[in-house]
Length: 174
Image (cartoon, rainbow, N blue to C red; front, top):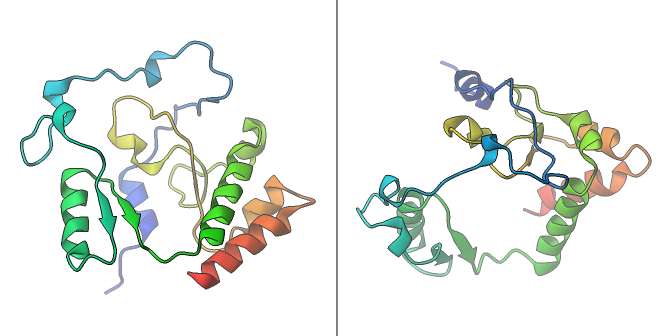
């Protein structure tokens, strides 16, 4: 029996093929496709609390002996959390941040050179969870599975080694 692969999940939930990626740096008027309204009674946590009365996103200390359970609760109730005391070197975190800034600051036409296909895993585009919402999210995503070399060469034809080398170094360190 073969194990399911990530692309199988994407086939079951394809991205909206008619969706145009919004260039957030050039928007002057918010299109309806991205206009979210907050309906307080529509959103509540699984514990029944009103979202507007819940505190901030959970911060989980990995040194806490209950970290595993806290992560489970944060996933169930929030879907997001922040980790502290993860022991990832600050310089590596800084390099990841710089690589992300370099990538997402590229002009839209350059990012679209490595656009993810509707059933694909790697590349630039809407974040994969977008298909589960009525409105488009105010974000963009770049997913890397395996080596980023093919994408890096297209994005930075004369300077791709910085992104590719960094990703390789980061992958080997973590």
